[in-house]
Length: 68
Image (cartoon, rainbow, N blue to C red; front, top):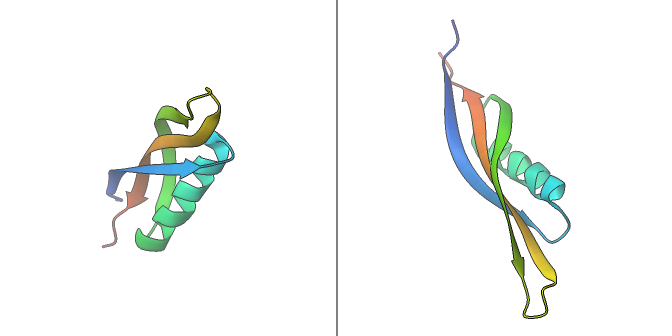
């Protein structure tokens, strides 16, 4: 039987939500062992005073399996 845990992380990118998600998962995998998946719980953008998007952010719920 496997036991999994979920943790929340926030990741950002200057490119896109997809890029932020990939960066977040890549970084989470460096610290967490046995990462099995994630879902995007939220998205947000930061913008400048002219309304141009300067940063894409995602809130990720990352699932990983605990070791025996």
